[in-house]
Image 1 (cartoon, rainbow, N blue to C red):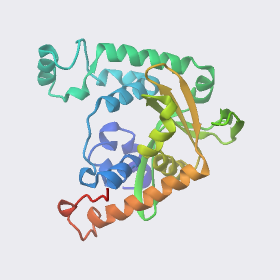
Image 2 (cartoon, helix red, strand yellow):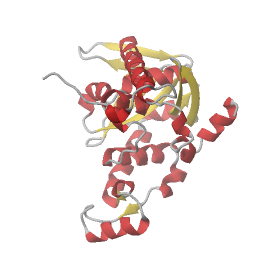
Image 3 (cartoon, rainbow, N blue to C red):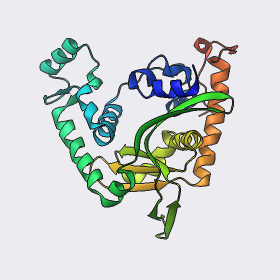
Amino acid sequence: MDREKIIKKLQRDTEYYGEFGKQFLSASNIRQLLYEPTQFNKTLKTLPLLEGRYFHTAVLEPDKLETIPIFNSASRNTNAFKQFVVEQEVHSYDVLLEKEKEKLNSLVDILLGHFKVFDIITGQEYEVPNIKEIHGQMFKGKCDVLVNSPFEVSVEDRDGNISIWEYPDGAVVDLKTSGDISKFRHSSMAYCYDSQAYIYQELFDKPMLFIAIDKKHGTIKFSPCSEEFIFSGETKVKQAIKIYEKFYSDDAIYDINDYIYTEVL
């Protein structure tokens, strides 16, 4: 299958996240390979991931919101909720509670109501897939927003200094929700957003910009990516590829079932 047909096929979520898409490495695989290699390519179901999925869909593809089940219940522990999950044949974290939906909708309104965010992402390309060979392995990625128009953002560092980040050829914009936006820098390293930034810059040949919103307070944060951040991401990608080639590639010589976690305390 030629490249254009592959990219067209990856536009569909069922293909991108399904077996067809799993032939490619992705940014989400990096953290798995580095910290939980036995869980490589396994689907993880958590509330933060479900909330992130709903938030992205509501902002970028609201016509697809009907694919996310909503149930009005005080919690996921009620008999009514448990029965609904059984009847729908889904995981409990495939279903969003009504109160969670309302909170997320308020965040969507805040984000899209911010003039700078609105100016940057409105009229651009959403959920754009691409593939590319990176350090000897084929990677896929689907960027939230591919901005093709020039823009700039002003950023204040921890010392109070203001700098202007210019994007004359646009950027790859990724939307994030955060439990504590004051710790977003720490989270970005812990969740390998640096690796994502490196991979997406390679895939789309544009600089990366994260736009995060605090789930508690609705505070918005612009986070451009420094050269050091991108270098850190590339280093992690190289390390993850070594693990992949050792245990999962067609030429792998080791069995992942023999993998042992080690750590000096």
